[in-house]
Length: 400
Image 1 (cartoon, rainbow, N blue to C red):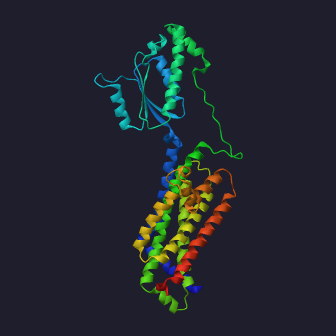
Image 2 (image 1 turned 90 degrees about the vertical axis):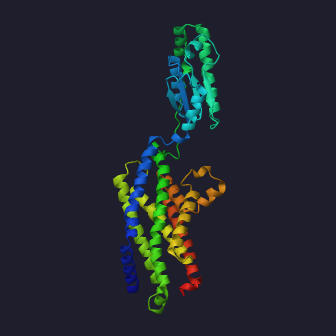
Image 3 (image 1 turned 90 degrees about the horizontal axis):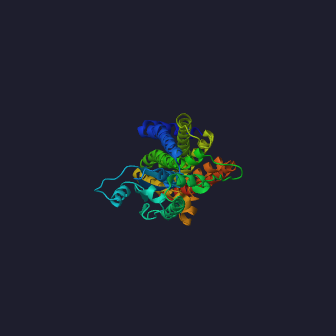
């Protein structure tokens, strides 16, 4: 036991001499928290913004009727409406104007309301009331076209009844209870637990946070692996075998050093979230700390496994980049996993990042048993990778 503490003390001193270790252990966790804070604030503004259809309206009419039509479209929660009430220059056609807008924005549908729109409708003239342009980038444009035709037919019907009388026309519209679409908000309830808007908005932010943590943990462990490679090349392992010290003490000292580093990172992240993140994440600081520590333990086991089969720190860094890119992608951190193929969804069940996000979501919904499941998964993954590392350690002749 005395040998173990001596080895651990020596490894700690070696880590403290490395400036990179200070940067990874102390400053990177704070940067991860800043990423979480910034993306959370952005998501809270409108988490469904990217799923709405963009519509641009050029309103040259500027009439009460055209404004009513635009307000009706603006009340549709599935669309983002951008409107311009000015007129285009005589040298430029409506089509060329919309083509420029389409090339410079994410809008997929364009509506032109001419200046004589109101007069035509009130007089029952159905010719060229509005012009509708579609880039065919969004299938929902067909629904929008049907939506517009429904209102125009109703307006024309009122116009023909009014026979050009503006007061009678608007009186008919005001008395028509169905002239304005009414939306009903339905809340999906899961066993009495409902996710609030802010809690639902944190999902993407949490995924980016986990992706950043993966980078920190893998390269943080590579610093400790670097010590292992230096000692391996200097025949330290063979010297240990010639003394009373055991390989078990040597390996344990390295793993305990990684766990201490992980503990420091976890505490710093928890403090940073408490002080710097002003958002309703839906889960407590202690819960986040447990999830981070579990993810870190799996990453320590993965790094221990990889160190047995490679021979240099540069190879470990290359492998780390590959692991980060592949596992974060397969875990669905960069896109909704529900839209991925079935094989990718199945593969994600073997990745700790996915279990981190899944457990956090379940805790938000009030499922307290998710922690036990997370603990079992973390334990199983650690046993699996450490068993492979032990097998490789015994089979590798360079350690004997």
